[in-house]
Each structure stands twice: as C-alpha cells, then as structure tokens.
Length: 214
Image (cartoon, rainbow, N blue to C red; front, side, top):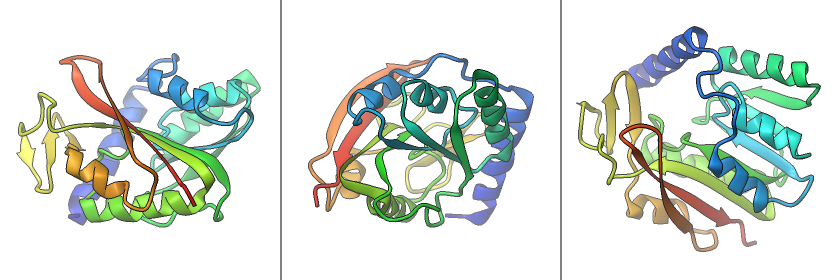
C-alpha cells in the first residue's frame, strides 16, 4: 500500500473526529449487537477500528472485558472520556493494524471490526491482519467483521488506487469481492456471510463471521 495514501487517510480521520466528535451517535450498530450475541457472556472482546466508541461502550455495558483499538488518538480520547462519564472500563490501544496487534496469543474470545477491514488496506495487509487476529483469538473464538462489497454504489467511483480501493469524498474504501472473503477465511472454519444495508445511498455491506477452529 502506498505510504502516502495511508498517511493521508490517517490525517483525514483525525481531522474528521476532531471536527465531529461522536459523529456516529450513541446507539450501537446492529452488527455490534450481533457480535455480542455470538460471544461468550463476560468474555474478552477486541474491537478494531473502534473510533469514538459507540460499539465498544455497548460491549462494556453488556459486561464484556473490552479492548478498543484505533489508529486515531483523537477518537480514543473521546471514547475514554465517554467511558469515564458512564463509569465503564474500556482499555484503549493506539494501533495501526498494518503492524502486529499489541496483544498476547490466545487472549480474546471475539474480535469485532465494523468497517475496519474495508479501509485503505491492501490485500496483502488484510491477509497479515487476518493472521494476527487468528493469533490473538482463543480456539473457538470468533472474528466478526463488516465490509462494503463490490455491489456497493460507490464501487468504481472516485479515485482508483488499485486493488479494489476507491477514494470518494476523501475516504478510501477497499471494496470486498467474495473471492477476498474466502481468501481471508483460509485456515479458519467456513465463513458465514450475511448481506445488509446501512446509512445513505444505502451502503451495501457484508457481515462476515468466521471462527478459529484449532
């Protein structure tokens, strides 16, 4: 992945979170509610790309042990302030997912990522991330992630960065094909794919669930 694109996206997200604190509201996403339902009660949840924390805070309210990771210190600062105001415990982690996850092997029950996998990450970087997620999951643990796919209206629109990454409105998105989902699921149990729609346009997404089987 072009380092200049990665740097530009990080700066763009920092500006966005600074200008629009709480930009996604307070209600958890439907995908977070699903992830909570398939996770062991009171288990350890790692959210990748937690942003300002609407889903991480939901997991904490449900009694999970929560680690919220994001590459934006601004967003994590907003999350921490909200957690403290509610009397919730959420561990935050400044994490670029292009690098190894800062967690021990087999330390979490569920890894959850709403839209993180379809950020400006190359296929090679996504494969490395899937291996890291598998490493930190306990046997039988689940990865639940959501992505915009190649049937989305914005696929093919805007600036083409290659590798099915298109930039529209300042945000670069890696649109997933079914082939890419299957590629990331190699070495796991079968991937479960559920289509859904969210937001304006509307955005067309897949929710993918796969488990570490060994």
